[in-house]
Image (cartoon, rainbow, N blue to C red):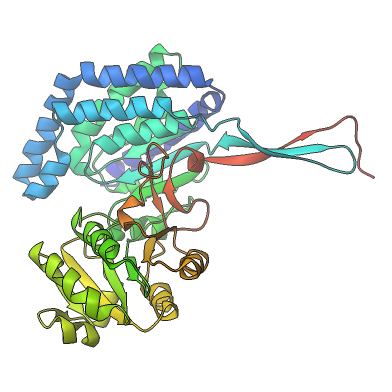
Length: 423
């Protein structure tokens, strides 16, 4: 047992050292070279589809033997269509603007110095995630385009698929003269590898965990490396008085029903008491027809008697299912107080025709994405024009909200002088 743990530790430390070494030349690659590599990676994934399907079949067979649910097996599946989608994702990243080297601001000092800030890569990023093999290609592409080396630790159920994807990506890097260690995957299912990875404070600059709340809390508790956290998405929609109730109905239905199992789906509906009689029974029946179970406060259940009573736990809940908590509130202030107490700093929306209420909601609700008259489902990197995202942060440091290429960089100060000395 001791020898096996030592082998895992040595392997992970070597991967960390190699990534750190690769990060130096990677940070100075031209946009042209990075884009060419990304396009060739996309071609390589499509050409290597038979190899990927074969590796994925091993994961699927092992998953079935271990009793994975049909939903988990579907998340794990790689077929021709999903491989083409992965390749398309790499091409989309290649088409995005390169943030590295961008000078975001310059200002002039009284002593004649010109001071500015320039975007640079973070260095080495560790990503710990579950299930979907497509995350391997997406994360690798975003890190390469932003000039970062990446260490990938996917779910144990997708090991063969992830290693096959990384092998194809590394082969392309080497053809372009880019160190293969710029993209690496942890090659073992041993959970100790995650613990060892989280100790590499001299090699890894940032860890991004993607998965359930239990995984993210474990990573945050264990890591000596800074962690971007996203525990859960307790997202709210507040239907104000005044509001366009037809619009409110469409937005609320979309926010809950369109894809309930994701972190930006609405989990709690707050309704102003002034619109309750006209709005609540109507949206409740539409949600009921879609199979949504409502859990309501006492005032909700007075108008929707089939709703189950909501408990204190329901206001904290991320259901990721066709379940919705509903609460009647007396004012905008009460709605914002509820969000501040029970929310997870993810995404909130107000449906209102009041400009003043909309502006107060935008200023005073401090979640990572705040919307006016739109579905919470738009809290997504692709939908917000980032092209792709590596995750959603509910930490306020270093990034907040969907993380695209810019969020995988930091800025350094640059200074132009003409011989100035400090007195």
